[in-house]
Length: 444
Ligand SMILES: NC(=O)c1ccc[n+]([C@@H]2O[C@H](COP(=O)([O-])OP(=O)(O)OC[C@H]3O[C@@H](n4cnc5c(N)ncnc54)[C@H](O)[C@@H]3O)[C@@H](O)[C@H]2O)c1
Ligand SMILES: O=c1ccn([C@@H]2O[C@H](COP(=O)(O)OP(=O)(O)O[C@H]3O[C@H](CO)[C@@H](O)[C@H](O)[C@H]3O)[C@@H](O)[C@H]2O)c(=O)[nH]1
Image (cartoon, rainbow, N blue to C red; front, side, top):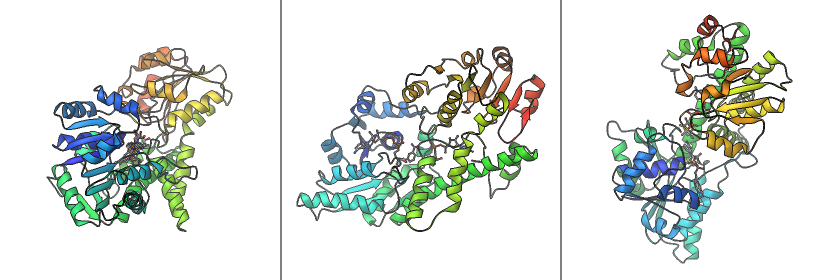
């Protein structure tokens, strides 16, 4: 089938590449010429495991191309996926300007039937806005009767596992009230839906809502565990043992129960805010979700609170090593990364920071800009040299079983603030490392 992906970010590029992999002819369009230049040079602008290989394979096979040419891109696809950003507006609501602009650019150019697929995360009612924008442009061109469908197909991929998640989806949500469009969506997704029918077809509004409900539920689990972690510490329990204890109940399950330094990324923070705002506008304030966000804001400060409790609030002359900067492992994405809050809190108390991340240091340098108080080093061990303590912020695999002797030998004193509960407190005690986990007390 002929597909156009509008927006070549995490969602648009992965969608385009994975659909090309199944034999579709895909054009990926972006308004950012730099991204298209990188893609046309055989590279990808983001770090996403396995994606480069899929992109290269399909470009070579002639099924995948990248362009800034809107005319060509709109002409090409029968199915046009909108995967542009929906960042938070000042009041927390989703800013739909890029989605509406993409819709208009379709309406200004289409000459035959199109299925316009909203893949971006968008509030309930957005498909109506997309439909209205396309129609308005068609009417301007005297083509008000031209048929098209607008479908909601929210994306559930996780960064760092995007290709895997797209290729083996838990579910494919399709919100559609157009039979022909539903049939085309079924055909397009058939290769990803072979072993078991995972496609759930519903009305458009319910599909749009499903995406926010899923992220809100996951964020709730994390904030719930983070709050229990605070309590566990106070009453002398270990949240890691509690996690295993409750996760064994299949109604609860083990996933997404990890207490840590707070959730970040381009989705949970913005989607929770957007749902809270939409609900309040609708006159149904969401009390639980409001608390989820508040708890997460507090959680991003928990690691520094522990540093302050140990070293005092004046950190002048102190130096801290940070391992892990990206908001989660296997990505270079720094959007809403807890590490940024931690760096900010440490440096504003006078400390300096030496930080290491396996892939996100160029992105960190871009986000932070030139700084005297933050040094980015190219090896984990280098960050430790002469530091007062080590803070672990992102659970990259290479931090899981490090050379503990090197940690002890390089730090001024062996003190580790373990923001992802990577290390066993008993082992730390045996090794003589002062260890502060999340929700499991200190081993001094
Ligand atoms: N990142 C994720 O893991 C993820 C997962 C599921 C859903 N989502 C949702 O998908 C959407 C996209 O997220 P993302 O992380 O891929 O965003 P992104 O910022 O990485 O990419 C968006 C791209 O769209 C381009 N763009 C903007 N306006 C355009 C236009 N009119 N025509 C063509 N291109 C245009 C931008 O230049 C940019 O390259 C958001 O709504 C997000 O909430 C993201
Ligand atoms: O038990 C856990 C699990 C995650 N996190 C944190 O939660 C954040 C988000 O992690 P994750 O969900 O793995 O990454 P995202 O790429 O942001 O993916 C989420 O957001 C996407 C965009 O909407 C959705 O498509 C995905 O289904 C949803 O998992 C990160 O900061 C994690 O460190 C925890 O603190 N504890």
